[in-house]
Amino acid sequence: MKKTILIIIATVLAGICHAKVDLVTLPNRDMTQLTIYNSADLTLVRDARSLTLKEGENKLQFSWANTLIDPTSLSMLPKQHAGEIEIADLTFPPRVQNLGLWNINSSVADKVPVEITYLTSGLSWRAFYMGTLTEDEKTMRLQGYVRVTNRSGEDYENAQTRLIVGKVNVLDRIADLARREYPYGRPGEAVPMPRNEAASINRVRMPKAKEAVFEMEEMDSLSLLGEPKEIKKEGLSEYFLYTIEGTETIPNTWSKRLPSFDTDEIPVVNLYKFEEERGRVVRRYLSFTNDEEHELGETPIPGGGMKVYRTVDDDQHLSYEGTSSFKYIPVGEEVELNLGAVSNVIVEPKLMDEKTDNYRFDNRGNIDGWDEIRTFQLEIKNTRDLPVKIEIKRNFRPHTWDIKNIGEADDYYEKIDLNSVKYTLTLEPQSEKTLEYELTTYQGTRTEDWTKAHRND
Image 1 (cartoon, rainbow, N blue to C red):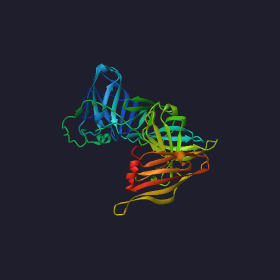
Image 2 (tube, rainbow, N blue to C red; image 1 turned 45 degrees about the horizontal axis):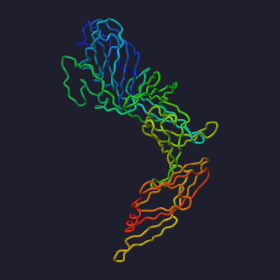
Image 3 (spheres, helix red, strand yellow; image 1 turned 30 degrees about the vertical axis):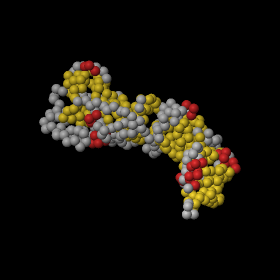
């Protein structure tokens, strides 16, 4: 059954509405605007309607039964005849749940557009992405989507939807505020109920939103597919506002998938990494930068999950390459996606020889220093039909060590810090290469000799 938050009650409550005061007839919505913050369970709703007012005192009833609206956030503003219409107060009748009564004093008899605003819970949105690599994997098509989910208890028809990227601070959870008992104090606050009169509050000012953040979600069976919508993005100092083109109908309990952007030919870098301490597997990484050079850079990219595919032939058949996720990407920053372990690029480190040398003795003739000398080989294989770039990181403990690269290994070598080096090379399709190095680590008093030798390094 369709739920509505605005209800016209034909019978005036006894003891509240006098016979000479008409109950305003509320027409259908002219427009609804939803501004959804995803870092907090918070949505600002702006509901435009045209009220038929008479001169003098008018009353308007508003019900939020079975919804997650915060009643203390309710506010009404005339859009015309502002100087001739006074929103006197909002009254909560005694012994009546989920019902408010607006008292309106009007100097005109006319149809007047008003805007009712409030905060609600239960609406959320997430972003997710699909990347499709070309056959040579040098560029990628990136498609962004947004999924809006409505669990607020209310159907929103033909609503303009706006999405906030950033972080907002909320003192009270809106869902808790919506569920509290009359007369709607703060959660847990005991407020005595008046016996013979209604509880009243003045118009409530809406809190100022500061910042907001969003994450991602992939396509699912709840999605309602419609015509593609353009999402307009604009910066608002500390957060970004994304406005979806046109209007959307988002029924309660439904989710709706909306396209965010579609950018082709984004330059990407494929890099395979191996680090034995993180598991004896090669992991694939895909990186790009949110800037104009990479066909992006207009706005930050909201964080989310991403599925990556590759075009494998002229008929545009796809192969699945992996799944990753990323956080919010500011303009100008690079993102590196971990696509997971692969089996078509292999790195096998092997210990080929091990010995000790350069002994040092204390005054009792006991060994108190020596060198450990080990020779390693790195066997690297690329079984793919494309060239691959590989980064092999080696970590050494303690930090007193020297390395001697054998053969062409020195061409690919780079020292990272006191404990790590890496070898970076590109392998042609269906090829393999072996790198070899000799590692000397200094033990006991031999560390003093190493320190003296490297004092000026």
